[in-house]
Image (cartoon, rainbow, N blue to C red; front, side, top):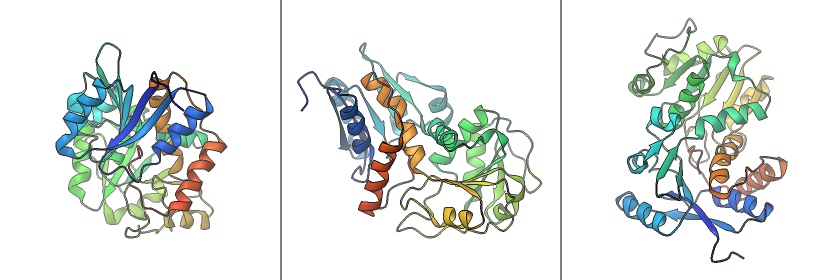
Length: 302
């Protein structure tokens, strides 16, 4: 039961019916005995500005942002953190007591935190990202900020090149299969299986392999023994890519950890407590995913 002075936050997107964020944040609120609530807020793009102004006026502490609003909300922020500024994408909003709106991108940091929780050191790089959408952009920005070389392969090469131009940061030496580019090294889609011998981490950031979506190619025959395979898709919890990696004896990291860890900074800012990503909350969300069978976007803020 919440009181009239409850702290309020939520997730804004269109749609938001797939989102596990309300389950996650309300679990943390109950665990810490906080007078607050976290609600799903379906808002179509044409009503985004009205919704943001109304929620601020209504006293919301902040919001998570999911598709399709992650780029559009940046224009309404008074201040962006470094990751949001570099990527032009925002997944967390904080409304301050003095009326400002602070925007941040926690997806990349959440991904790195999920790797650390799994005992994986991304600094052994290079890292090969499959896909060139918003998730790939956020991950690449965080990896580059930590000095980790990044390669990107996308079915449409032009999108990979656009991502590389956006980041425009030196990414270190590239494996022999890569084509040099500004910051991020770009690979043709057909070339990524051959590049696996030269990378330490492979990450699928596309929707391929998600339940209800086409399969991702799982040719890992060139993989070295040190390769770690990660997938930010979490429906199903074990994708065909992860299963193929396990069959070859490779270490794997599923997508649920990124979803959990990217949520921590927002909760801390809105509710004043830094929540823990532990076995209990991981099992709660895993059970929800398994029970629903509902496809969910690779967007980690969902």
